[in-house]
Length: 111
Image (cartoon, rainbow, N blue to C red; front, side, top):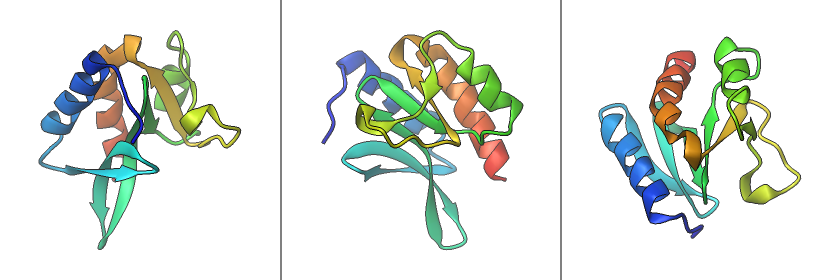
């Protein structure tokens, strides 16, 4: 499992609690994630990768462009690898106050 600083893990826990009525916790790639039930399957909308929260916003949305403009944000690349999740923005822990509204926008986009 990928480790996060205690404050970052606590911020993710608050997200999971806030959206607990519509998102479920789980793991993918050894990372804690939030999933939306979508027609019998789970759709990952947020993923904590150490000190970065990846949020699936959709690369053509205004929310994606706005999130990328935040200091330290980038296209999400779990494990700092070469594979980018092109519809995802990686938000650093220092921007954790923006995590909740962006996860709400991801939910809205997921429809």
